[in-house]
Length: 208
Image (cartoon, rainbow, N blue to C red):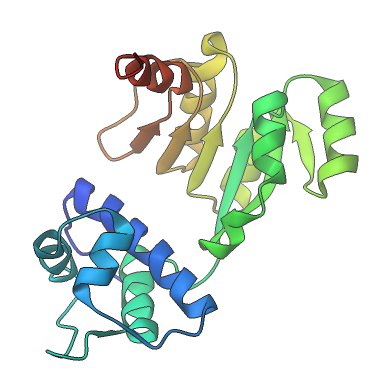
């Protein structure tokens, strides 16, 4: 299905709405008002209605949104109608912790393989996580063969760009980067950078 042209910030907010809707589905809630959904997502109702305009026309005045219908529509636009395969690169402390996180499947993602440069990490993590872990030299071949389009990078800064280059060459189109490295990728590749130290640094401004 052809992707709809949606602003990047809107795409991010849609993922927040979807998470809120999934929680409502788990609670067997059938309808939700724009005000309540906006509050749960931390946005204004006017912003929510504008964002949902990219997905389609939903909601009934006085009744709100059908939770299941809206969730299905957002899943379709976001490409989450089936589990999206993801690879993890780097299974040190952070990478291993991410592999243990069980919430990815609920959000529509499945880590199908991981890669590391340390043979001891490869063996130990494969046994502990239930996710196959391969030597990083096999990464490009595996990603290409399995048609993987998304990757998580959790490697030291010095290795970040090299890993990204191999992933992009193998067909990866979206990267969640936990490496301190600022990655240089083609315009067609999207990188979301997660700098935990920088986030803590910005929070410290508000601590008295």
